[in-house]
Length: 610
DNA sequence: CTAGGGTTAG
Image (cartoon, rainbow, N blue to C red):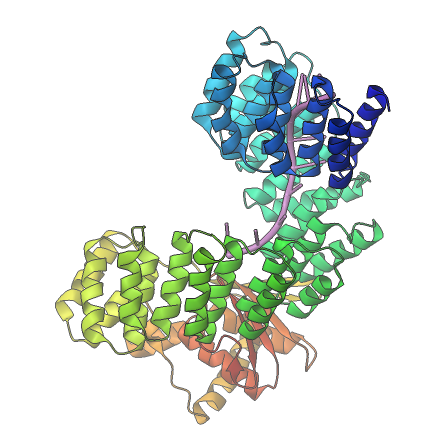
């Protein structure tokens, strides 16, 4: 074969990644003595990178007798594509020193992209300075990537400044700057720019919508998506769909999620990995774990994200056994778990009281899978130990870990002390927390309850004083219920709802039946200093109860009632919902701020751990 | 032969 034919092969290789062909060509190159052709070697390096065979690319790069700027650009691109931007940045000095090369526009672009990928703003500015001093300082492509870098580092105004200096703006530079404003939450600026853009194509819509999802403007993202569909934009690329499925998940909009799913099928993207993963997560977050499982089991191709999404779904829905079984299956299929997988696993063990399994998993995380535990892992692990009553071991976790324990971590330990009646330890830890100036309202409630139970009224007063001084106030709680296309939001204590009277009557009826069955209101969760009766009245108007009552009035008997809540369910509401599910023989599913509760026949899927 | 925008799990 002629060199040109090899070239053609390599190009095909890069376009349609196939590691087999790349390796075979590599071997042929050596056999035929063509391994000194710089052009072919660079091509091959590029092909390995594009096939995702990073290790082959790295080996080859290390062994190349001569490396030019093209080799460097291909090498840096391979690292960027493999999501290892820091490695790209740390390799760069070698180019200057060992290979005595000055970066060209291609290499500069790679470096900027590496800074963007690792959020290295300082380094990014240095590269920017190098670029301005170089003879390539007119290059619009480098400028485009600088726009993206500043956008990703959260400084959209700097992105804008570079954008303004681009002489010929194209759809890529417009997209980068729009996305920068959208993702930092500067909504009107982003919209303004997208109006000003000469072309509104799928990419600019995607930048806007994804940016909004990333900055938490899920509702705006949904509206924009609907507008985009109305404008008849052809969805020739599925990425916007995974974004919007994500916002359905964040908002727990099951109905819209189903519609988008139908769109996905109609557009022929249901075998796309990103989309399928997003769908698994969406159904799980909309508390329809059955459908999540269904999507997962029909997937032809699954990666670690697919497995982890479902695993965490099972864990949060209180199905620890399924989560653990999924993990075993995953490992036996040769999928390597990552740090997120272990969060889900330890969480699952923690909520099912599987101490030994959790301890083994935590150990195997480092020893078998080489993953260094983060603070979040330690928090999960501490939760497992303390919930199950291994309080000394839990406290040892805090002392032995390489992180400073934060307020939620101490609070988790403290609440377990209380649960297990370890008064002395509880007071010791409370004093410690109080000294370190807590901020979370729920911590104050916990502290005050503990001191009150021990009769330490001086300390109770101290907590109260600190609380007032810091103006600690609970966020207003609200609950949403979706009935068909209509949805209703209820706020705690709401008294001006049009159906207030009917709701009140029903709640009163339910309460007297509950009291007959032994219900006693648990007012420990009430922050305010007031009479018992007043506290009970406050609980009576908690938003989830209003939403459930409304649901009972408005829905067909026997159907599942789904509630989405912004805060965690309080102890008393949890008890109430268990009673109600039994009295009215209805399944009630509540998604709270951290997990899911399936109330049925008087019990909850969370096993009263939340 | 090498470079730029939009993507899923906690």
